[in-house]
Every structure is written in structure tokens, then in C-alpha cells.
Image 1 (spheres, rainbow, N blue to C red):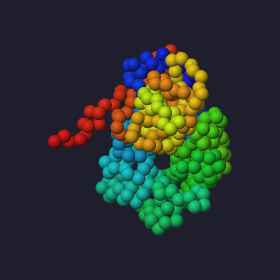
Image 2: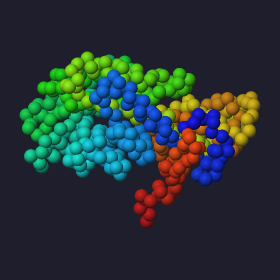
Image 3: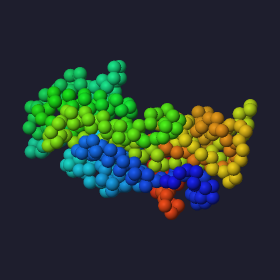
Length: 412
């Protein structure tokens, strides 16, 4: 996508006339560039690396199909996401099935199709044992998500507690079984700093050496990587400005130290979402009302905080006012959404006197926005693929309607 300042008011107005006053602009070119840079950074430091895209971050089919075409795999955490991946044409052997709520049907389908299944909880374990009992001649290979203390006092609710009795029972039962085999280990933590990923690798490799008779087939470090951002954008978001290569250097160094012989190295699996999709989308919305309340200038837009960052609730996203004519600013403006929620504030003290008819373009909204927008008061806006080269566009998702939402209800 071309820099925001090069998108003109006329271009945005023409799109609004066709698709409505709010919409997302998606750049497949930027998605491909992000994916390619991310993968290349890790291949340079650890050639046995696989990238599996996190569907939960943004399961827009145009994104997921593109990742599959780029050679990435799909990481899903529910039967819904499993069905999305299948509908997108992803082959089962290119799927990683995670999460604490796998369904009986899809976990069986995953094993039969050659997907990588990573067990998260006792429920998963019981389903695998049930599958094995139903097919005594079958061999089931899987990974375990581990729960250990990444930092003092940090407790995760996911995975098998390394210090718990249930974990030891599972290890003993696997060792006594000819059908069940742990072939890899998985972890995922919310920490995004580079140092934390080095800690993950050192803990995972030490645990693998203790638990498994040989190097595992894979070690999966999950996601949680920052996307590459300028220092200015990072400061606005309260994040660190980290390059993909910084993660790759630390992780690659730890992996090579633990497995010095290239022929005996496990596959390193990474599950990025935000890191490669956040800056591939912008949200455009039009100002529909401006008012003064006790000296405070407030502009209401056709969109909502739910459209931009419902997960982080941040009000510091980079944004640009797109007006028909430039104007001097003497006052700041709070930008608020259309909902009846007082906290629906997209930006505070914007240094601009926006007017009705202006558009606001919010950047870095590709992560946990489209997938977490509730059907609250208004349905979801359309998504358009925007071309950098010829300024063309194509519809990726149409405007959702009220009837789309009502069709699952039983009307008596």
C-alpha cells in the first residue's frame, strides 16, 4: 500500500460512494513483503524453520489463501478455524491444530489427514487415547504444549503444567504405549521482547533433552512477535521497535547451540500473526457529526473502536485526517465512535479541527480487529484490496447487513 499521504480525498470519496462511509483497505503486497522478510530472517539463522500463520489474528480468506500461496502453513485453534482452512484449500498436512477446545470430529480428521496436532489439556489427551482405542493398529504422533514459568510469578492458563502430576502421568502412559508418541514440544507466551524468546528456546531444548529419547522432530515457539515498526509508530503504540532479524538471531543461536549437528536438528516452528498482518490493513471512516461539549470538541465517526483495536483498546493508532481542503488547526478534537458506549473513543486530543465529511485513516489495524468486531449496533464494514501500483481495488468482503446477523436466529 502506498504511503497514507498519497491516498487522496477524491480516491477515498469515490470508494465511500460505492461501498459506504467506512471500510478497510488491505494490501496483499505488504502482506507478502512481511511474510517474506520474516521467513528469510529465520532461514538465515536456522534453515530448518517453518512459518505457520495464526488464523485467529485475522482469518480473512484473502489473507489466509495468500499465506498458503506464499508457502506458509496454517495454525488453527477451533473446529471453525479448521473448516476455514479447509475451505481455503489448505492441505491437512500443512495445518497445525492448537487450542483448548478442539472438537472430536476435527481432531480425528486432523490425525487422519496428517496435520500436526498439539495437545493443550487433559481433554485433548483423553480424545487421543479414545482415538487410539478405536484403531489399535494406528500410530499417533503429536506435540505437547508446555506450561512453565517463563519469568518469576508469570502463570499461564494454557498447556500442561510441567510441575503437575497430570503431566507426569501422560509422559508415563506415552512411554508404555506402542501407539502414542510425543514428537515435539510447543509453548506460547504473551511476552514480545527478544530476550523472552531466548529464554523459551533454552527452556524448551532442556526439557526436550530430559523428556525425549532423541531430539524432537520439532520445537514450536508459538507467536507473540512484534511487527516491524518505525520508532515513531512503536512509541505511539507503547511497543518496542524490533526487527525480525533480532528475533531470528537470538532464537537461531540458541537452537544451533542445542543442536550443533545439522542432520539432527528439529524443525523450528513459528506461529506469527500480528507480526505479519498488523500493518496490512487500514481502517477508513467518515466524520458524521462534530459538537462542542463544555469546551471540548468531539467528532463522531461512522466507525468504532471495535473496528480498529478491540483487543488492545488502544487509542494511539497512527492516523491521518483526509480532508477535501487543507485547513489550519487551532483546537484539538476527540474522535469517538458511533456506539452508545462512553469509552468508544478512537483518539483523544487529535491536533486537528476535523469537520463533517472528512475521513480518518487508521493504520496498523490488521491484527485482532476484523475477527473481534461484535455485531453491536451496526454490522461490519467491507474490506477492499488496494493496489499500490495501479490504484485499483477489489472487494474482499462485502458490507455485512442486518439480515446476515438475524439469519441464525429462529423467528417465531
